Image (tube, rainbow over all chains, first blue to last red; front, top):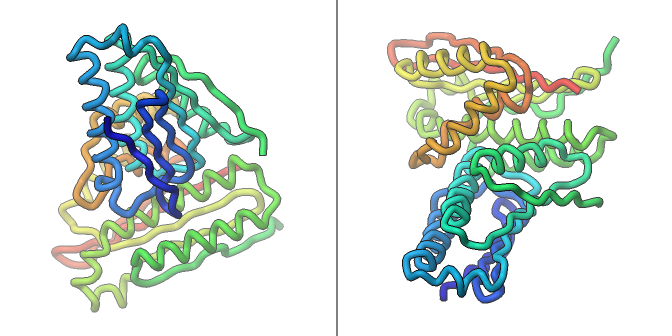
Length: 136
Length: 171
């Protein structure tokens, strides 16, 4: 199973995809210089992983635990938002196929805009998010 | 009289290094001020969208050195009291003028709720260009400021115009 473990940099977030531990997490800032090169492989890996579970009818086995998506983003530009929305479409398709997935959207106390973006995203894919305010 | 600061005043070619310098300077300034987290974040994220937009036209500038002397790319951030103004300017191709005018006029005629709807639709439909643009920048600007986008075009010659834009971030 393909894992992803990308360290955070100045302009790009930390990204972890750890299927064994049922975890996908993005953390930090996102305005990569080449946004396509950064996000395409991540989206491709996620899409293939979740589509395979559905296609090979492993849903029951997958659902023995809940797969967690943690979005702990401080800032992202509009091009990154497009790719984050592509990741959310994968979540939407997977939940519609009855996969057990939960989305956690973190935002800093006072950062109402980041919470609002999460609400927009949740609305867009018709999947409820769990919102977690972080005090700093 | 309201207090006034020129936070950033950049005129000239915009490279990735220049963008890093501008954003670093802006971040340091915002961190040093007692401001709502929301305002800090808005000024910063709008600045990123603006400099990204200017950078996308950098190829145009590289090929037109002479023109740049008279019409340099411009990125200015001012503080007037509690409000912030971002001014940008860059050369664009005449053939793109109408597309931009239509886009801004449409946004300026929408209320915040409709801009939110348009944003969500555009996210799903956006295609990422080779330069990494999603075409979402202007929508994000209208959504984040909640204000009308002020803009102007000056025709330079048969091929180019100078596009000036102003964003207003109110407390």
